[in-house]
Amino acid sequence: MNNVVKIKQEQALTFRVTGLILRILFGSVFVFSGFVKAIDPLGTAYKMQDYLHAMGLLQFDDLTLVCSILMIALEFTIGLTLISGIKLKFFSWSALLFMLFMTPLTLWIWLKNPVSDCGCFGDFLIISNAATFWKNIVLLLMIICILYCEKYYRQYLSPLPSWLISASFFVFSVCISVYCIAHLPMFDFRPFKIGNNITEQMQIPPDKPKDEWKITLIYEKEGVQKEFSLADCPYNDSTWTYISQKSDLIKKGYEPPIHDFIIDSPDDGDITYEVLEDTNFVFLFIMYDLNKTCTSTLAELNTLYNKLNDRDLRVIALTSSLESDVEEFRAKYGIEYEFCFVDAIPLKTAIRANPGVIVIKSGTVIDKWNATDTKKDFKKFEKKFF
Image (cartoon, rainbow, N blue to C red; front, side):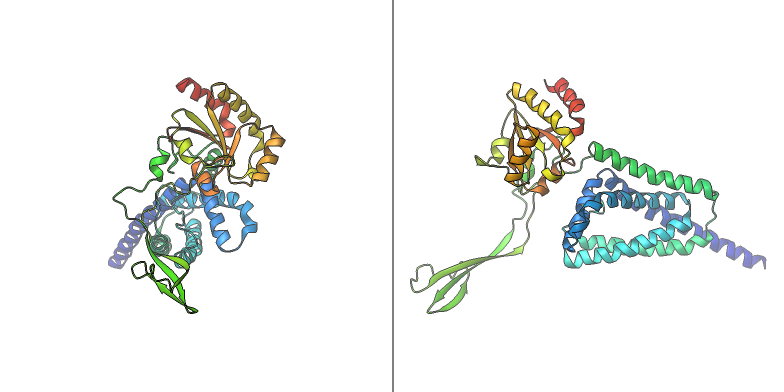
């Protein structure tokens, strides 16, 4: 009888230790994933919008920011509670439901490829859609094992403090996200971060592979069309008439961290390198969508423009809105600085604010801030550089 009891005790200890190791591993992934997204909730919201647009659900765009904050906080809370063993049964089942939702979603993303990456680790770590799915398979198996081992776990806190601590984890994550929305992410992992040279981030290094294309030329002769490669194309045969050309991407090459960043001036056309090669400070006011721009900051930006204009420094507002919207916007808010046009994606990547301010010099990002912090941050900038 004593031997049976001893064996059962040893089994229970084995399951408790196994469960603890699995909980630490699983929880660490969730805490890490939750934290790197909590400091950049707008990035997660943009990724959610990509998912919704791929599914044809554009009407839910306005809910993505709130949903991203709540989802991130839930993920962060699950991770910490599993590591600490607080409310283990409840949050183990929550983790299982979370994984049962995310695993099929990432399988669909892998098979259909509606987005280039799922964004599960924010901009800190970008992994392929296939790797994301298999990572979720591993996590799903882990949480199933944790649930099995959970019956051997000994709860060490009573219900009330357990719920209070769990709630504090959730609130902590929400507070981080709200702070980073009101200002900027505490850590910037994107290619437009301070210190990076935009021109260099746009270039393809010589040792990196280029895109490989198959070029097909279509010619017609006596009413019959035929496809030719570049090598056997009948350039010098006047009996053939050129019709069209098609290009097929055979192999994707290296994509620079910053791409599609083209500054289009309504008066001068492409001025990208003119701006990036300017050896003076250039202030970029980023307003990727004027319909969503926080207008309460515009008076402060107008004041900043006047100060910069007195110093003969260039100020350009960058937006992806229509030119007609720009003219209406300028007239309504008394804006004098020039507007140029850039695709929305690089603008949203450049700074998590609308509006936001980026200061560059010779193409290098010198400083950046949310327009709500203009008065405070420009004083710091003046003290440091002027």
